[in-house]
Amino acid sequence: MVLAAGLGTRLRPLTDERPKPAVPVGNRPLVGYALEQVARSGGSVVAVNAHHLADVLEEAVTACAPPALRVSVLREETLLGTGGGIRNAAATLLAEDPELVVVLNADILFEPDLARAIATHRRLGAVATMVLRSDPDARRYGAVEIDDAGRVRRLLGVPETVEARLGAYMFTGVHVLSRAAFEDLPTEGCIVRASYRRWIDTGAVVAGHVDESPWRDLGTPAAYLAANVAAAEAQPDGCLVHPDARIGEGASLRQTVLGAGCRVAPGVHLERVVVWDGVTVTESLADAIVTPKTIVRLRDRALGA
Image 1 (cartoon, rainbow, N blue to C red):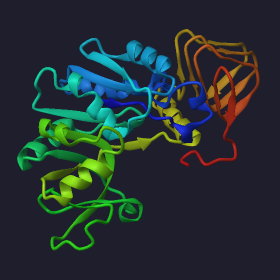
Image 2 (cartoon, rainbow, N blue to C red; image 1 turned 30 degrees about the vertical axis):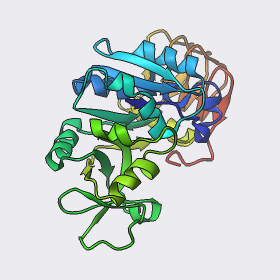
Image 3 (cartoon, rainbow, N blue to C red; image 1 turned 90 degrees about the horizontal axis):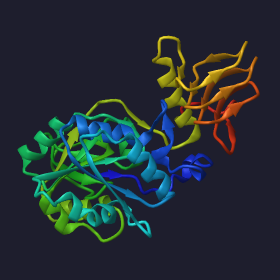
């Protein structure tokens, strides 16, 4: 399952135009990275939940889903939360009687080794497995703490005392769920605070699998711009320009991403700029995001914020 129903409030005003999973990163909808990862790992049936600007999200999913996937977009009239959203998709996810279900977030860039996470899940016979990442401030921000065997023993500081020596990590938003987990999901609300809390408190086996693959949250306009700048810098000439974009005479680009159908007027200089599909840019910009409806200027903001 790919969780994609959130409001993306921290990414406004971009998410006033597109839901967060549909914003372009490196000229691809962000949700496309999660769908591609599912296809690469051998998945075939995918549910994507939708709420905010659901029509736009469904269009993006249809456009970028790998052909090997059978994708169902499930619209939520009211937000059901992570637990409720997964439970609502049970009929789709469990229709072919799978042993387990992998859940990913559509709004982050993260490519964990799912095969290894699944191996941990099976080794411990877990009801659920949380894919974790290292963070020096994990205990400050809400740690998931595991013992040497990889079993989650403390979640968000509870219980206060545990006999085993524990390592503290942050949750990446990727889960491996057994079929049995679906019997204990809330109809709405957070899966961590409802189901995981109950599983741990009642002694059920919850695994924690640490994966140190790069993890990037695109929660703010500055972080979103930084991800696109990184995609541009990965190109031979330091820019990512869609073949349908047109650049006027004397214009120059640096660390910039241009979407399909973009036009850059003659003499314009763009540096660390993302331009969405179909937009014409007529002024020089630096550290900015240009959409059909607005220009978000980040000159005075830290890109990693």
